[in-house]
Length: 175
Image (cartoon, rainbow, N blue to C red):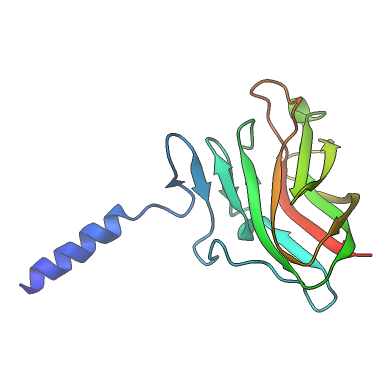
């Protein structure tokens, strides 16, 4: 009887999906880190800033992967996106900062950051190399009080099958 219980738990453990390859349906995959609970909203720091790290996001799509060595999402292509849940205590405007890396053929591809019905569009810039992450302000968004989904995705005019930048952090800094 005791061995049956041990074998049962060994089988259950072996069948558990790995942290970066949880299947949804078809070829789409979720990717998140074991110590982050998907669905827990990110709340503002003491200074009001919201920090959306890749570690806290969900990468959804056929190729996107969380890269723990860079603390960023990579292998980002058409058909992929990243999601975060946030909770804002009061309506206000935020300057949106993006921390990323990119080089070569992905430079010039468009991206969109959406929060509810509001969005910002940008173009992939060269950071110097895939190993060099830079952060820049990309615009201002007004976010209403409440819970929201933040989505980072390729823009509509991306090259067919084109690649995207590696995303490390999106910071929302109150104005």
